[in-house]
Each structure stands twice: as C-alpha cells, then as structure tokens.
Image (tube, rainbow, N blue to C red; front, side):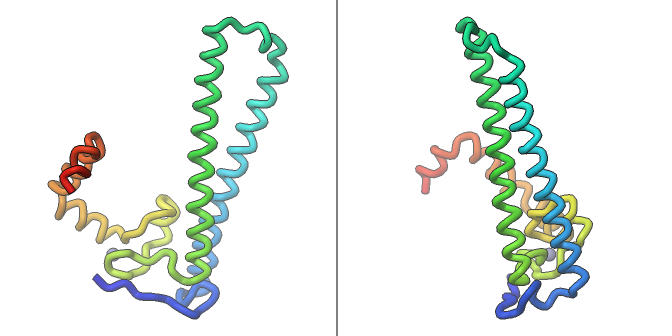
Length: 155
Ligand SMILES: [Zn+2]
C-alpha cells in the first residue's frame, strides 16, 4: 500500500484548481443541506410546542410517547451534527490536499463518486476489489458487530 502525502501545498495540494473547486463545492453544498435540515427540524419542534398548549395536561402514556419522539428527533439531529463534523474534517483535509484520494492506491477518487459518497476513502476499483476479495472477512466483521464483546475478549 502506498499513500502519497501531500504536504506543504495549499490550497488543495497538487490537485487541479478545478477539482479542488468542485470538491469544495460538493462538500459545502452538503453542509448547507444538513444545516438547513437541522434548522427546519428545530423550527418544527418549536412550532409543535407552540401549537400544543395542552402540554401541561398530557397523561403518562402521551408524555412517554412525546419523550420517545423527542429522543428520535434528538438522535436525528445528533446524527446530522456528526455528519457536519465529518464534512468540516473533509474540508480541512481538502485544504491540505489530502481529500479525494484513494486510501489504497492513492489515485483520485472520481468527483461523481464523491458527490454520492462524500466520505468515501477508496476509489471505485479498490472498493470493488476489496468487496470481491474479502467476502469472508466482511461476514466476520458483520458478525463481530452483533457480538463484539465476545470477539474483543478473544483479543
Ligand atoms: Zn484505489
């Protein structure tokens, strides 16, 4: 495995200006979408609260249902916040010229692929090769997910 380091070159390292601009646009667009989705969600939640003057007289069942709803909303917003962090990290890597390169072969990951999967770390070829080469490993890692404690204890 060879991973090229792109050091001391700004912005976007030695990638072309066009590619740098395009990748930056993709990431910033994604960031805007998420921010506006979160803002809409927060506004909805507030609007619901305002249109719901009976909040004080909910019975226990209604209250716990509302709690579950709140938990779901919170989890969604938290997920989006995590995605936002990833986008900010990706933008920082882009500035350093370390974003958009395949982790395996260090080739450029195509713009189309990054648009669909902004956090892809492998090019399409390497991802496919990996999937074809390691079905057993993938099965193991999926199983590992459901009983990770057991496998972790095996060291
Ligand atoms: Zn690759």
